[in-house]
Every structure is written in C-alpha cells, then in structure tokens.
Length: 601
Image (cartoon, rainbow, N blue to C red; front, side):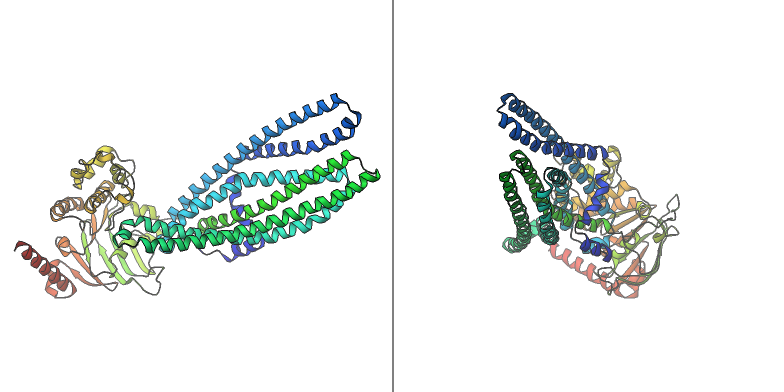
C-alpha cells in the first residue's frame, strides 16, 4: 500500500494533514458540531470569569470585611460552577457522540471500499492487517474526533481567552509571558513530528502481529496437528515484543514532549509571578490584580500544557488516519468503464477466449496463460483437465473478471468483459469452487448467499436438489443451525453440498464447477453428479476436473499444460491420440482399478 509521492510530500510538510481526510465525516453532522462548539465556548468562558471574581473578593471583599459581599460572591461562584458543570457535561455528550458516529461511518466506508478492491490487492495485502486498520486505527480516530479534539478545542479557547485577559490585566507581565511562548511552541511541533512517525511505526508493527495471530487462529487445527504451538507462540511473542518496543518508543517521545512543555510553561509562570510580586510590594499593582493575572497565567499554562499532550495524541491519530487513507486511496484494478456495454437481456452463456495471455500481478514475469483461444457454445459442457499449475483455475478468474488479460479478449455473449460492468458479468455466473467458503452463519443464510432475498421454499428446494437436505434435517436446528466459522462443524462433503445448493439457487446461465464433487464419498458423488447433470441442462458449464471419471460425459475436453491448450476433443478421441490426456487417463483408471481389486481381495 504505497503512498503517492504527493501524499508523502504533504505528510512531511503537515504532520496532521491526514486528519483532514476525516473532516468530511465530521461535517456530515453540523448540529452535533455546533452544539459541541457552543458547549466548549460556554465552558471556557465560564472558567475565564473565575479570576475576575477572585480579584473582586481580594480587593474589595476581604479589605472591607464585608461578609455579605463575600457571601454573595461565593454564591455567584456556585452558580458559575453549576454552569461550568452543565456545559462540560454537554460538551462530553456531543463530542463523544460525534466521535462514535464518525468512526461508525468511517468503518463502514473503509469496509465497503475494501469489498470493491480487486483480487490483485488481496494477493499482496494481509487480511489480518486490514482488520487491524478497521479496528485499532479507527479507535485512534474515535479518540481524536471525540475526547482529544474536545480537549484541544477547549484548551485552545481557554488559552487564547486567558492570554487576552492577561494582556488586559497587565500588559507588562503579559509581554514577559508571550516572549516565552515560542520557546514552548517550536519544540512542540518538532517533537510532534517525531511522535507521529513513531506512532505510525507502532501501529504498523501491531498490525503485523494481529495479522499473524489471525492467520494462526484460523488454522488452529493444522497448528495443533503438527504440534507447532511453541513455534507460533514464539513468533507471535517476538512480533508483540517488537510492537511493544515501537509503542514504548512512541510513548517515550510523548513523555519527553510533555515534560519539556510543562516545565517551560510553569517555569515561565513562576518567573512572571516573581516580577509581579515586586510590583505588589512597590504598590504599582494590587494583590487582587496579581491574583487575577496569576490565575489567568495558570489557565494559559495549563491549556498550553494540555495542548502539548493533545498534540502527541493527534499525531498518533494522524498516523492511524494515514493508514486508513492509504486503503481509501486504493483504486480497484478492475472496475466498470465510464460507459459500460450492457450484456444481452437474456443471457445465453456463450464464452470466447480470443488469444488470451495473462500473468498474475504478483508474478508478472511468470505468465499463467499463453495465447489461449477457445469458445464454449450456449448450453455446452466443457471440461478442463491438466496437471496442477496448468492454468485451469486462471480461466475462471478471467471469466469472472477478477483480472484482465495482458493481451487478447474474454467475451461473454458477444461483449468483451473488460467493456462491461463486472457486477453484470458476475451476475450471470454461478460457481462451485474446490475450496468452499462457508460463513459463520446458519445453513439457510449460507445457501441464500447465492441469491439474497430468496424465499425459504426456494432455499429448501435448492438444498434438496443438491442432496443436502438429508444431513441438514439431522442438524439440531435444521436450516437454522449455526455452522461455525468457515463451517467448521460440517464435514467437507457437507460444505461442498451447501456450495452446490448455493449455485443451484443462483440459477445463472453459466455454471463454473471446480471439481465440485471432490469432497464427496462414492455414494454421495453419484447422487450429486446426477443433480449437477440436471442443473447443467440448458446452461453453459465449464468443469475443472482432476479426476477424469467426472468428465466422461462432457461435450468437449480441453487439456491444458504450461498455460496452453495442448489437446481438445472428447474422451474417446483424446484417448485415441495417445497424448497427455491418454497418459492421465491410463494412470488414473488403472490405479483406480488396482485399488478396487485390492479392496475386494
């Protein structure tokens, strides 16, 4: 996920610039923004009235020993405290609500954008890292938009107001304070850049650890089968320790920043107080005025000190925003053209590969297909066979337009798929992959994934046609049984039949089968094969087969080797040629017969 040169340059010039990408989300809710700003202003203004009351009491109330005057001022202070508490409570509510709302929208938009990215993006990206950005990084943003932004604005208003009142109270002493401000602000900016950089590194290392943990947890059965618990625990511990060291470095930078800011600020206040005390002793300033100035100085110093901490937190949030911005800046390699060509209203299912050459983006120097040309007529069943790595599955990826060819065309019903909307292309296709995806949901929801909104009757009929109803009915809650993450509570054959039911429910004119019966036992395979043959009638079907017994009834067989189609014909004609297919057939059928005879004996 490389940043563009322009983005990287802007990032160096303005370390908080990535947070600007969040502003459109904030501005979606102007009522919350206005309410939060009013609450912040009222809270800050109320706080700034306190020193005025203190000066009046010191100069007038105590000097005259007027108990009524003092009592009235204390009553006023209670009223001010009540208004301050109410404004602060409103500030907290509006700001935190705004932060939660912004982060919810941001998570939704990032996830929605991720689902539109092409498979080439996921060939290089780790799913665990993407999840980390959706969770940990958005939490950082929530803190920035919510509490951190609230504290920043409150202290900014309070600091500016306190500085203004300091000038009104004593221009002489204010000049001394303002002279010290550059000594505080300039290091803040320099340290803030370091904090943001270190925070980004900490977030990146934590995302790497999260990605590793996600991968191992999802494969825990394999992990335990090979008794590699100690190995993966050690690697994860190393990743977590690296993340900790990066986070500690970030925290140390923030701690140094906080120390420097607070020390210089309050040291300046002490020096100003010393000068002010000299004026009180000489009679050029009243004690109340010095007290008022001192409180305003403390407010200004406290606000500036808080801003130094907030700067570090905002820098950390900027690192998170930068990582999210990188995802949002990713453009799908495969997208609909500005004016996509419509597919015919009634899909026939005609497929044409015209001199197609293709290499995966992750391996551009190793073409997966070389000058592949073939056509499939509507309603025809074509089997594709060949050794592993021959390019069989790549055909499916190009038909589904997960990738575009380097040269040549893939044509569906007379329309080049690169000129059509990918959603329209995929809407004409149902697929049963070899590696079936079953979601952590109910059986019903998994089948309905083939056609969202399908009726229960259609779902149950699809399961029946796929011969999945017989095991579904034995489950504890039937179609409403939760199957666990990746369908872990189901056998391989059961997951395969759910995938077949999903394809049946989709009712598309093109059917892609990647060894759809590979996980079934002999009895179930015969029954499901019968169901698939009924399903294939009237549909264009391409079958990738590793076991040649599943393709004997195909209209044509394409034999692939090294990314090329090397043979084409029926089973009988290909066997008669004595080529690659004949050798594969002899090997499989003779091995199967020998195994059958051994089992019988």
